[in-house]
Amino acid sequence: MTATEAPPQTTPLKAKQRLGDIVFSRTSLASGAAILVILALVAVFLIAQSLPALVVDPEKFIGSPPSLWDYVWPLVFGTLWSSALALAMALPLAVGIALFISHYAPRRLSQFLGYIIDLLAAVPSVVYGLWGIGVLAPAVLPAYAWLTENLGWIPLFSGPVSGTGRTILTASIVLGVMILPVMTAICREIFLQTPVLHEEAALALGATRWEMITMSVLPFGRPGIISGAMLGLGRALGETMAVAMVLSPTAIVSFALLQSTNPSTIAANIALSFPESYGVNVNLLIFTGLVLFVITLIVNSIARYIVNRRKDFSGAN
Amino acid sequence: MSKRIEVNDLNVYYGKFKAVEDVSMLIEPRSVTAFIGPSGCGKSTFIRTLNRMHEVIPGAYVEGQVLIDGDDLYGPGVDPVLVRRQVGMVFQRPNPFPTMSIRDNVLAGVKLNNRRISKSDADELVERSLRGANLWNEVKDRLERPGASISGGQQQRLCIARAIAVEPEVILMDEPCSALDPISTLAIEDLIEELKQDYTIVIVTHNMQQASRVSDRTAFFNIAGTGHPGKLIEYDDTRIIFSNPSVKATEDYVSGKFG
Picture: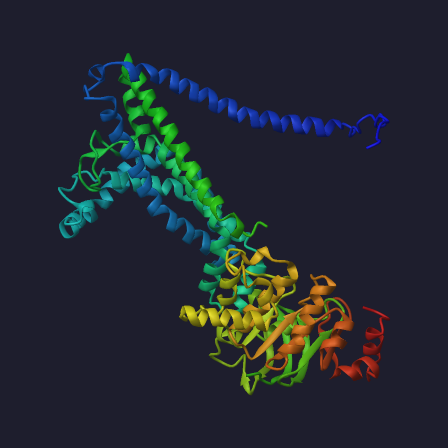
């Protein structure tokens, strides 16, 4: 312990600052911060504008519901229910299409199909809404009638059947078609990136094509499938025009798919009610927007959790 | 359970391009046969035709015969899936399934084609296969860890365990040590020595010392130049190939004059 002399005075080594590095790091920092700022601004707006709806007497709301939640809950239910239906229909289809494009179709056909899928993504939602009213709803009517007649004992398909075909199932089908392209595109990209090594490992063990896909392609693509599903779900939760056009809403909570009374969704309800709203009803609609914001946040967090849970097994190490 | 491989006048094509021309050879059961030759000479292509793995590449096809104990691999109605169960393969880079545990990796091939296996049989098979690949003592306490969590050399031995778990007749190894360090390489070479008691082994290698250490017979492949098909130049006992080959090109290659 004789280290009495002071440690040699050294100027700390400074890395040379290069202009390109500085510009790039500042730009990316600013971009990252911008996301947070925008999100915070939206959240502040939603919360500030919702507050009046929380303190006021619910009697003052349109339709005089017993409480605020009696107004919000059917909308939340309708939003979740229609999006879940859309996802349940579209996800298997998206994975199937993506697998066909990436592993089954000949190269020329798969390129063509890829373009078609991207084209579908570019169709505006109002067009899907029109298609839902004009083509889909009349077309599915006979099928709906058959379902209520023959499978009506299942609560989902209980009658009486809607006379227009404009039910929550129709809206969900439209939503499913809308979210299909983005999910397919993401799944296709990730399936194409499956390491050839893993595919060959499966084949060399005597796997059939399908077994090769379940052993190597799907496990590798799992995080991508989940991300794609969440992007699709996010779009379905927030979709406004298509649902607003197809559904004639009622404030009910019902799982029945084929009846003429259907719950609306938060976004569609805002779009339909906002033009005629005044006073505290505007705050009420904004409050439902806040609820949608929170739901989307929760859904995305769950997806993150699922993707991260088996990180060790992801093959990224 | 090992079998004899007989190749008669085999040509391999990728579309219009002839990659390998006119190969005939006889590979004895319970032996190690090494394929050597410069890059691009068709030895990897040729080894893949022994379990029809070349068919993964669109447009690839063969002319000629590959007989395993007299059964033609390319006969009408022969299912490539069943061929690959009989003729296992280990690749250049270790490729355990990253989403599966070590245990599931070993059982991956066994559970294919809707085969079922009881828990106790599976446990026994996992231990036997991992012991067979000299890996049991290193991983027995972490069988549920991911297949990618062990070192590269261990992963390659895991791939060998996975291959022998389905009890093939033949094991093909396409440069199994080229991505490994010398210690891991030695472990694999010792393993090949043991495996040859039970299996017919064919190994592609760029490492001439490795060929002379592990193999009984050696085949030397060469090409006349880019765009020409690869050909089998000489096939003989390893001792002869490395001491007194009958073709000048073989001698030049094994003595390091080219390649």
